[in-house]
Amino acid sequence: MEEWKEYKLGDITDLVIDYRGKTPLKLGSDWSDSGYRALSAKNIKTGQIVAHDSIRYVDEVLYHKWMKDEVNRGDILITSEAPFGQVFYWDSDEKIVLSQRLFCVRIKQEIDSRFVYYYMTTSRFQSEMSSRASGTTVLGLRQPELLKCRISVPSLDTQRQIASILSSLDDKIAVNKKICENLEAQAQALFKHWFIDFAPFKDGKFVESELGLIPEELIYKRIEDMPHTLETGKRPSGGVKGIDHGIPSIGAENIKGLGCYDFSKTKYVTEEFASSMKKGIINGYELLIYKDGGKPGYFIPNFAIFGEGYPYDKMCLNEHVFKLDFGNKGYSLFAYFYFKTKQIMSYLNAQGAKAAIPGINSKDIDAIMMPSLENECVKQYCSEVEDIITQILVLSKESAKLATLRDTLLPKLMSGQIKLNEYE
Image (tube, rainbow, N blue to C red; front, side, top):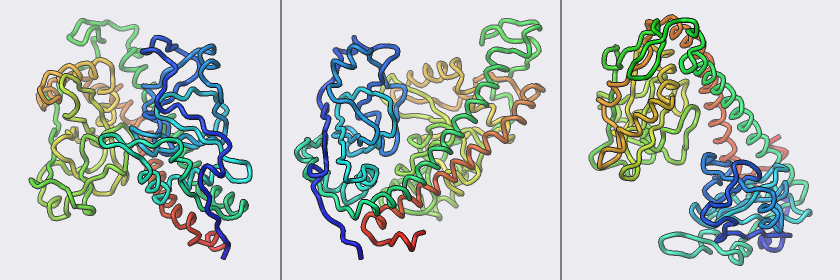
């Protein structure tokens, strides 16, 4: 069996860029509208750049002033706190600014940096980082302690083979994600063209309404005046703590958009409890609405569509999510894009922020006016968008399976339990 050697991270590192407690800006006064992206710890989640709406930019002068050492392709970004221990492999020639709570580590050429990245995602490395961190309310890691963390490595050839296997799965997931983003953008663009810009009605008469000017020939109805089901689910009175399998129970934290789901946040109810539920069972292609939660006076609605076995074949809701079902798959998809319009988002934001515990109720949903399914253009949109959304859900399910395979292989490959010729 091939021998694996153990090193401290500092022994295989050429450079560490450490801007954990610093920022190049003074209270945001130097932010630019374009230029170089500035990333902080909140933008890094293992394997992903997240919170894109919080990313700011700096100009060229400030970039060169701040980044004495630049982030290069093949470097590894590590969050030191809030959140702690997230890692990201920088596989781009884009020049970025590092802001608060971030390390950038450059691995020596005789070690495969992508292999090191995957090793950093293992429970062994994550546990050691945690053991070397300090802090009571917020866990944080200093550079000297990070560099003491140990990494076991095989030969360079084996490192590269392991990294290739794992990155091939990640690459396919990334391709699927890009396809899904493009498909959703197509459906969004068509919706905007027809029902925001009203392009098909531009030569017709427009009339005043509570929504502003709308085409006279386009029929609007309140949701309460259309056939629909609006309901939430529930969880056991004693909560779900200690239940680690069963039927996934979808909460507000799981409503993140189309084809987006954080499997690490899944909670469960027992099969017996789920079978006793009269409401809140997810069948697929219903509009799921973030119902309540957040800081007082601050409510940002969000929506999701599940289906095609994504994220799970069987699911139910808790009491913090609405399920809006019109009994028509295409019209639920139409509602997904309609609810994401600026006008409806603003309305729900205002309604939700009024409550002591931010949130919306069934009356807020029922009062919404939207183009009804009686309109031929709505029927046509529903027909055209169904296949698009189905593709997104199918690809998202495939990506979830690939991620599970990667996460299953990772510890076995990193411990030498799997011989590569057996895998091949």
